[in-house]
Image (cartoon, rainbow, N blue to C red):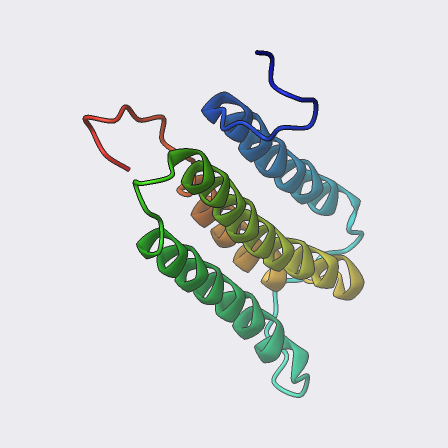
Length: 143
């Protein structure tokens, strides 16, 4: 019997495509920031609280995303694999969205202030995002 339309089956290749779309959008926005800022500076301004709060907020978003992902992984069961795979996909998407959002906030502030101080943090965040690539696995290798 064919599956009904809209049935969300797990496909790790689709997850890879989504991951690379997220990564690609961050890299494109990074290059846009690098080449569009006129007279860029790289300076930490002690009088501006945003120079401390924005990188800390990005770090908190990254930590929170990892905790949500790890807690969700612990709650997966092997009794209903289809549901577990759907939850795994959702966990990946939530984690990536939070980390990408942190990168975009950093890059937006880099554009607003014209300061590559935020760009440096965004580059580190994008490198961290690159480490979050989903691994294709088989059942005998585990998650």
